Length: 79
Image 1 (cartoon, rainbow, N blue to C red):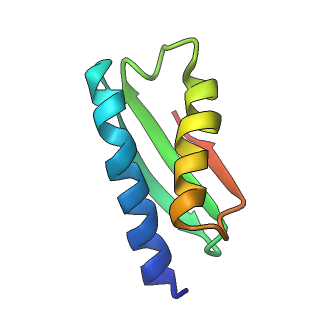
Image 2: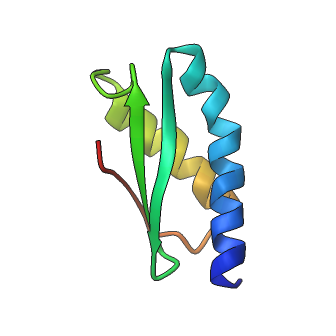
């Protein structure tokens, strides 16, 4: 998978997740993809101060990104 394909697949994953975050007044932005294995995102809006944002990041965001781009090893929140 090329770097462009990885980015496109990560964006598809975020598009799948975004409606759930927006329904709670939050959002998510892709910041970068390093070496095609590490994704940096920023949780926004209500997601910033939310006490479950680490759980959301690991169980929802990371799992969905890995579904679309299995070579991704980690997802880091840069809030």
